[in-house]
Image (tube, rainbow, N blue to C red; front, side, top):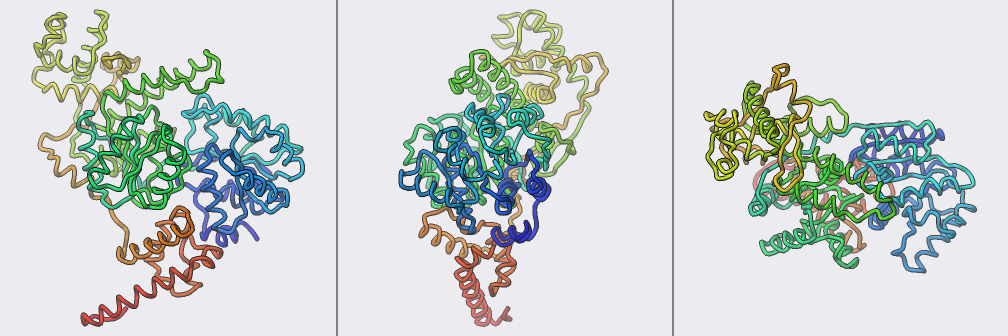
Amino acid sequence: MDKHSILKEYFGYTAFRQGQEAIIDRILSGGDVLGIMPTGAGKSICYQVPAMLLNGMTIVVSPLISLMQDQVRALEEAGIPAACLHSGLSQQAYFTALDEVRAGRIRLLYAAPERLLTDSFLSLTETVPIAMVAVDEAHCLSQWGQDFRPSYLQIADFLRALPRRPVVAAFTATATDTVSEDIKRLLSLEHPLELVTGFDRPNLRWMVEEATPSKKYEALLKILRRNQGKSGIIYCISRRLTEEVCQKLCADGYQAVRYHAGLSPEERAANQDAFLRDDAQIITATNAFGMGIDKSNVSFVVHYNMPRSMEAYYQEAGRAGRDGMPAECTLLFSPQDIRTNELFIDGDSENELLSPEQREIVRKQDRKRLQEMVRYCYCSRTDCLRQYILEYFGEKAPSFCGNCGSCLADSEEIDATIAAQKILSCVYRLAQRGIHGSARLISDILAGKKTKQITENSYDTLTTFNLMHDTAAAQIRHMTEILLARGYLAVHTDEYLSLYLTPRANAVLRGQEAVRMALPKKDLRQTERERLLASMPDFELDNDLFTRLRKLRGHIAAKESMPAYIVFSDATLRDMCIKRPTDEETMLAVSGVGKYKFDKYGEAFLAEIRAFTEESNVKKKAEGGVSA
């Protein structure tokens, strides 16, 4: 067999996605690779296909037991022999897996990094040839990354301990240049093919909605109403909020479950399974949930609070729309989230293996990433969110995407250079007095408000006081936050979230740089904005048939105790609705249906499609229509 026949036979696809074939070719030729591919781009295919062709076994290093189990189950369902070794296995299951490996019947073996240097694992590699080591979630190697795991540093020692160095393939969804260099250095990659497929996910609609803590649940309900009946993840900043939001949703009639590290392993596993099998429509979770979750039909992700980094946000939000269908990613932002994240960063007790100096380096990087996250939230008022995300990860992008909250807003662009100079001057004048004020204080001073804080501290004697009396304080604050998003200002994550000038502000203050802003029109109505946000196209061409196929899939998944998407993804079911296969040949032409899966499930789905078609024809004849 070759790579194309394996892709079709086992995975049911006729063509590779962007970047996959180049990576596979490099691996098959014996070269190392570093693949930086967004969630949903098909990283797993890049090492699973060559694993079927290489002479020897592939070891996949993975950080989570649940991820390993799901990957192995999906491979087994596709007819690919795979196994995993982890602490959650019974003694009998563990030794059975070892026997299968020693007998040469396993093509892919998944293992946590902590297991690699154990005597039993190393002894296994002395008798079983290792063709490739694939490192999933490779950003965990770098202390500059958003999810550094010291246990990942053991991978390099493991590679050196092997009798023969195998091909090494590293994969991650997000990596800055610094993190990429760390991955290559720490794994000693030899002249690797570096492939970045691009971070754009055109099917995702990015949005930021500002809401005070007391109004967030109300905002969440609006999002759920426009995504009625769809599957979604709600990320919360703490265990307490995760519990609270889940409890409210259940009381309001939603099928919701919870997930956080404080629950028992049994409840976490049960709740995750309920979500993966579509028994629960919604899961509320901390960031403990989701790494490697392969559920394809997540239609929306809501961040109830601002995450602490763009990398974490992009990975978590990117769990929506893995099937390529339109999906919505909404962040509910409150300025209070900034301070909460800062407290979490300062109190982070993880990574105890690091020295105090190393932990402080990590904290400084975390604070820097938090500033970038704050800028993203404020730029939603005027700048394209997709552009911000792509440029953060080093890609050029147009300033208008037409599919984010900012681009959908009704606004008009103006020359705001003079207003920007006044705002920056006010920050400067306060700094001369040794004061760093909040955005609210700046706007009140410029608007000429005689508040208690202003009069008691003599801020009304500043030369910038009342300088923008013809502009509403709310508009001034809005413009101030735009300057923050553009990088002319930065925020101290203190109790007051006070502002200070960055070097970039100098050119504006000196008249050397113009500032343009897209500001909301005064007649913008919330109902119109809601209509625009709700205008997500729906491509379920025959909803009745799609519903029946999903129901059949659910019965099969429940019977075999596995997530529904492992049977067939939503994208595959939609393709069935479009192509209406009638036999094995036409069913194998459906995207995502391979020979092994057809032999297991094909006839059941063909029978359902035939029954639906016959019932539709009878109904049409009864109504005097023409049969299909």
